[in-house]
Image: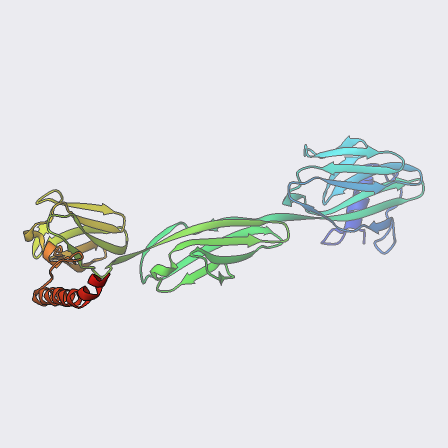
Length: 358
């Protein structure tokens, strides 16, 4: 049976056919059976190259070379100085008695595979084979879009990547920062809470490089108003009630005095909303302003409220202030002053005779 009689064509068959095609085997030279060696074969180490780089395929010549060729799988790249490949990335670098070298630029996955240098010397054909391994940096090719969900929903994030070697995938929550969340292309978050909202990062990594992309999850929840703080204000002064809420999406505020809604700019009151905070300002407190107030925060998921008391603070009067030295405080203080005066007079009477002697 001839060398090409098998269902699967071997590299040895391909080399012999290439030699014949290139007239490296003289016409009439008998083809040996597959059991007989036709060429001296040498296998070089694999060449590992990253996608996008250039690779050089070198073949030592030696002896007296009559014909030479570089082959890629079933195609001929170069036969001596003649280029057979139509790929513009393939070029001849060196062809002399010592070396036959070609270059492949901008290597891609399609370039991976076996290559053979076939040489016809004065004595017999010789082949050198090498295998190109192409490494590809990871690329995230399928990633979940940013999500807006209600608190309590089940969430699944997906991240798929390509690359060679096959990249490993990890998920983690960045803001707020937490420990590693998942080491899989899928991240399941059952019954998501507001604390799990934030930026999720998918990282694809292999021996070559790393690719990172993020997904933003927004968790909607009903408002929660902080407990109201009562405020005391002196009559005629400026007073402010503050209502703070935690809510997503942003809450709308309403203020009430008992059951009557308060509108901005009416009755000497101003309402100012800024993000999660609403302020009810009294420009000039009157007796009628003291009382109970309610703040209500509302979004599409619900509402919450807090109550406040605006009460009067009495300013101290002059009668309640501490008096200066010598001031009469009350009846007891007056009696004490009288006693001090009497004792002073008696002391003068006693000491007067002694003073007259001098």
